[in-house]
Length: 230
Image 1 (cartoon, rainbow, N blue to C red):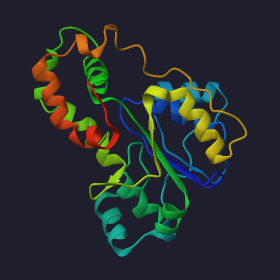
Image 2: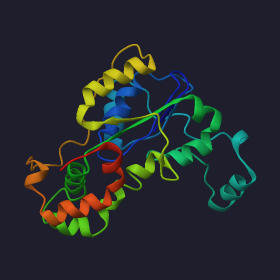
Image 3: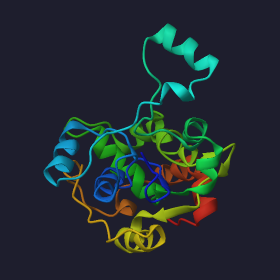
């Protein structure tokens, strides 16, 4: 997750949409005061090798604490902080409505049937694996629409960002975002978390009719808003 005061934007991460690569790429253009959350150690190594900024300013300053926040820190013993997959509602709460309302907010979304297949192989990197149907029915796929999808970039059921970019048009979207944000160049995407899926078949060849229907139900909001088709 990134809040860039330098370029006046907020990037919200979603699952299985190249968000790690996007965050690393955007890090090239960030400033001293920008908020950058941490990513996996191996991905931080990639970011460091590229010479880009790593995690910084993610601890919420004490000056922004409310009475309820002080209670939490006394109970849990931990500072309040911005986190990697923080959703729109919590970002708005910590950043404040002035920043939330004035900054350009964006994220990425992906065809849900393809997204589920990608998540399946990420969750189960080696054999033996459950079947895809078992994975879907276990409830794991729901996480892609809740903590890692629609609920991440919506508030009270309404999309709360200025733009939901299409994962399927990643390169074109990055070029367009660069122009929108006034970046001095187009972010170059490194490869991150790409080695887990060995089965490269199209999702239509991997899903049964029952799987298709189950995913359609889980991701009904995404399908309705963005017109995804099987």
